[in-house]
Image 1 (cartoon, one colour):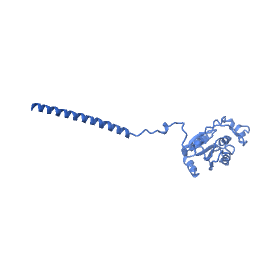
Image 2 (tube, helix red, strand yellow):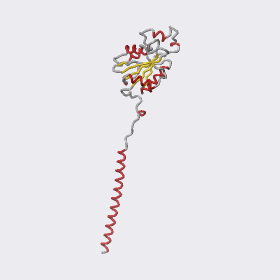
Image 3 (cartoon, rainbow, N blue to C red):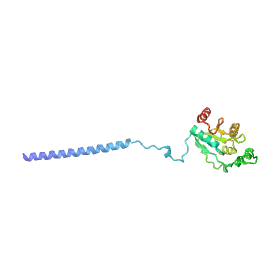
Image 4 (cartoon, one colour):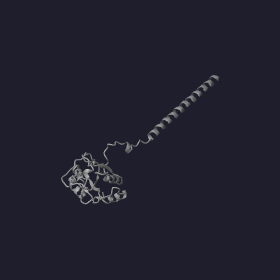
Length: 219
């Protein structure tokens, strides 16, 4: 009897030990599985615009404000328009910048005066990198010189293919209205673009005024 009881005690202890091991393994297994579940449930990191490649082309459907400014007035208008329309900016730069003397309206021999009197004058562009293909709508911004857009704008609209683009113009002036300047640029525009009527604005034009005009064009 004593031997049997000792054997029973030994067997009982072995069962208890086995149960303990099984419980420990079960807890470890549960912990590992819950860790895997939590890992799977964690959302993937989202790439922000700032993290994206800055050299990537702009998305289709966006608006580009392409401007030429010799004194800074049209630059101010273009920047205000870009903010109001949630558009991007591109500066149209001449290969040879205009000096203050070049813009002397009282001197018939100055560069700007000579160019404006010559319909065939085409000042060279500093570059031809305007991302026209990446945009659906192009807003041209320029000052009025002698009743028309500066000849550099003629060069610009003849240097790219605007087929399928929607186009319009905004301008600044010391006294003249937009007149026929946009109509003239439309005639010179390379490719078949859909032109809408342009408008004269002050450099400090309010965002709501620019938005109101633009929305009225149906672009």
